Amino acid sequence: MYRADQTGTCVRLTPVWPASEEGNITFVRTFTVVAALMSVFLVAGCGGDDNGGEETTTGTASQTFSISATDYAFTPSTVTVDAPGTYTFDLTNDGATDHAIEIEGQGSEERSDTVSPGDSASVTIDLQSGTYEMYCPIDGHRAQGMEGEVTVS
Image (cartoon, rainbow, N blue to C red):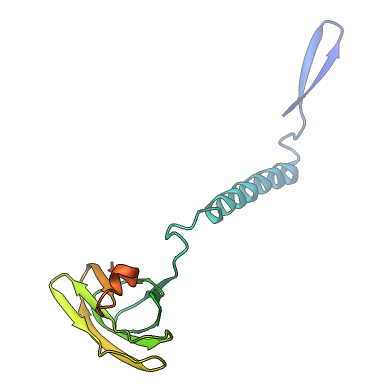
């Protein structure tokens, strides 16, 4: 940045932060870098909700996930895991009717026992990379929206 000094018919440009004032230049450079980084973090934090407001769970191999069954939904309805492996899904029936959970895809299919209201059951499945359907196999429950997805990276 320069300051214009006019003497007679000549204009002389003088640096506002001359090289001899290294401290000022360092401050301006540091401030600029910090401001740029803050802008990046603010923009990254403004991302939208990519899953339409549904709850999502993320985990790693050989982990157990808790799933709540209500009339007629799973919470969370989306589960994402980072690697192939053996996973257990613990289903708790928080609804007023019987429910179960079935996970199907990539050549695998496993189902829990039917669970009465207030009770729990588990299903363990070996998951490979890909997407799996998760749903309640009780007649008509899936059609009423009791379904979700398991994704393995």
